[in-house]
Length: 265
Length: 247
Image 1 (cartoon, one colour):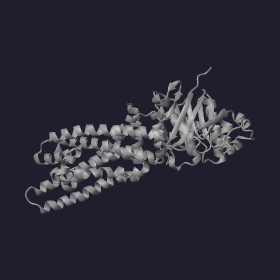
Image 2 (cartoon, chains in turn green, purple):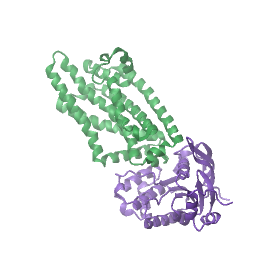
Image 3 (spheres, chains in turn yellow, red):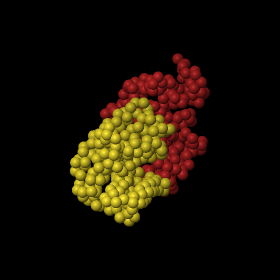
Image 4 (cartoon, each protein chain N blue to C red):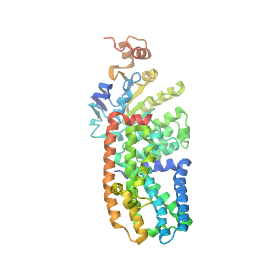
C-alpha cells in the first residue's frame, strides 16, 4: 500500500466535506440533536427513579455516544464511495493506479476522522449538559471505540458492495443498514431484554458485546475484557467477510459492466 | 520496426445476449493517433473501458507497453491516462485541488509545479482557483485534458472529448490534441461521433459496427473504401443499415 495515495484520497474527501456546508452540518447536526433528545430523556428519568435506577439510566447517554462511533465509521466508508458516484468521479479513481486496498484504507481513515470529530463534540456536550464524563471509561473507551469503528467499517464495505451491485437503487442502504443492527446491538438495553431465541443472534454481532461491556464498566469501573475480546475476534471475522464480499462484487461488477454503469448514470 | 504501445487481440465482450465487442484486434504504435469510430452501441466505449480495466473482457488479450494488462495493471495505468465524457472531477473542489490530488494518485513527483505547467500549456491558468462545477463545457474539457496529461502518459485515451462542445470550442480542443501529440508524442486512442474530429486528428481509423471492426485505414482510405464523398456519409451509410462495406 502506498501511503501517498491514501493521503491524497483522504485529502480529497476532507476537501469535499469542508467545501460543502450541507455535509458539515450533517456531520454535527444529527449527533447534536440525538444527544439532546436522549440526554434530556435521561435527566427526566433520573428524576423519577429510586435506588440505582438513576445510575442505570446514564447507560442511555453512553449508548448514544458509542453508537454514533459505529454509525460515523460506516458512513465514512459508504458516503465516501457515494461521493465518488454522485460527482461522477468513480471512473477517474478506478482507472487510476490505485489499489482497492488503498481506496478502502482511505475511506477507513475518513471514517476514523468522522468518529473523532463527532466523538469529541458529543463528549463535550455530554459533559457540559449532563455531567456525563466519557473519560470515566478510562482505557476501556479506546477498546470500545476501536471495536465499534471496525464493525462500522465492515458495514460500510458491505454497503459499498451492495451499491456497486445494485446501483443507485441501493443508496438508501447507506443509512438503513446500521439501524437494522441497532435493535439487536443492545445499545440502550441489555441482551437479556431480548427474546431468548434472539439473544444468540445478538451475541453473534460485536456491538452487543461492546454495549454489554460499556454497562458493565459503568457499574464496576473495570474493563470488561471478555466482552472486548469476543467483540474483537468477531470483528476480525466480519471485516474479512466484508472484504471478501467486496472483492467478489467488484469482480462481478467489472464482468457485467456495472462499474461503468453506476459511474455514468 | 517499432514495437506497438498497445496490442489488442481477439477481444470479445457480451452482456447477457448482447454482443458488445466481437473478435476485435488492433495495434497502436508510438506517437500514432488512432480513431475509434462508430454509431452508438458500436462498442467504442466498451473497448476503451476494457483497456482501462473497468470492464473485464470475456476473451482475448490486451498488451500495453509489451506487458499483459491483467498481470501488470498498476504499472500500465501509471503510464496511461484518459479523458471521458462519462466521468467528471468533483464539482465543488477548486480546479487546482482536483488536479493536484490526481497528480499525487499518479505518483507525479512535483504535483503543484506539474499542475501549474499544464494549466499554462492548456491556457487555462486563470481557472486555477475556480470551482470545477462552475466551469463552462469547454473549460471543463480542458481541465479534464489537463488531468489526462498529469503523468505525461505514453498512451492517452480520449473518449468523445468534443461531445457537447460548440464548433468553436471543439475546433480549439482538436488543435490542442494535435499540439499535445506533436509536442509530447503520446500514442492516442480517440473515440468520437464527430467526423471532423476524426479527419483532423487521427492518423488511422478503426470503424466499429455491432462490436466488430468493419474496416480500418486512414480517413481517406475509408472514404474511398465505402465509395462516398466524406467520412460523414460513410457514417450515415453504416448507421442506416448498409453495414456491409463494398468488397
